Length: 184
Length: 103
Image (cartoon, each protein chain N blue to C red):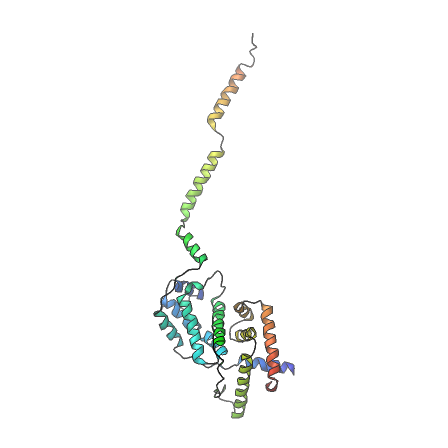
């Protein structure tokens, strides 16, 4: 990696990518792959699929760099979250949801076997209930509970105002609380 | 009770399990991009901007052009001196002959 790339902002890298710079693309991919993978994983609950979707999103950006328009899109991550979410939703419409892995690994190795079993069960039910939520409520939850994304950024990524986002989260949480009564 | 439920739900949402991605995911994407050509079709607005950029003039050219325009405007708004000379000579003659009463 050439010196100086890490100091460049996302916007600067994107301008270079529009000029065909591979090193700028490499820097952008290395900087953001993990965070977008995490988001995709929350939708598809499968590593290979989540990786494929993130790869697809980045390659689309590489092939069509002019889709990024700095005057329209305030922040790269906010804009790219929307692209990844749309790809995940498209994928879910095309494919049937993958059943959750029965052998989910323990979340915390220090837990006792009983605690771990309960926790795994809770996680499984939670994922199932989140998957059953309406699309917009699910997206609001996935964006807001993703590290480093403020409610304002999540609202921008969804193209709604802050109040609408808060309302979506509240409705999602009310539904989840109702459906997961036994585990709360 | 409800507050506790809210808290627990928040904790569960924040600690949702995510299977880590392959370590080489970023490298895979970068390598794949190297074999892909870029599609340089520009959206209309960007195309228009680039078109105007082709006709971009440096700042000194704007200064010279503005000076010329200013000169022309000032030149046109100043009264014509050759016309006023004739007016002056007529008024001097009328002054000189003003006292002469015709016989």
